[in-house]
Picture (cartoon, rainbow, N blue to C red):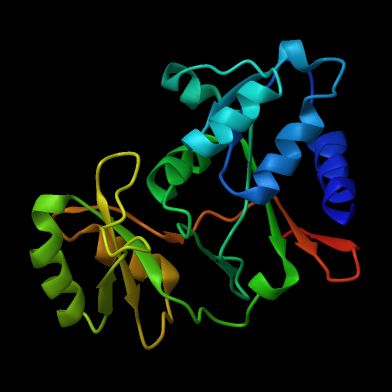
Length: 221
């Protein structure tokens, strides 16, 4: 029920008629999609999903899905995060949709992030998902190691490599620390074969911090 209340607040505050809306992946985005399904003006809205999971959810909710030609015109993106540090930089990509999510976030007029309170941390303490072309898997892993990282190929339960919807693999890479997220993002993306990095340095316009007691805070950098 608390997530429903949060999703309703997000929609009430940020959704207006005739918008183009980007949809991130995960359970929180699904709650927001279901909330928008009951809007009286939903037929005036157009949606661009970042994953098949959220596309199916939007289809079930009767939302109008448009193609990538409308990405430059996105009004607002709703998404989650795996970690948010004290500077409001983020690590994303736990679900594997980091490339598409960063494309949408880079173009959107505004960005709204919804995350559990446990995702807000003083400094990053988890691995960074790095999407890599399969041909470059070995060379990128070596380069990451040379930069002080410990890359691990993401696999499924039975040991098969996880393959993104773009046909790439993910190296979940642990670093001792990420003191300068902007610099780290640029350095990692400069490795040939890296398609995208799970360090997100564009700050959102609003962060919803969902608490265990069902309440939430709205934080604006």
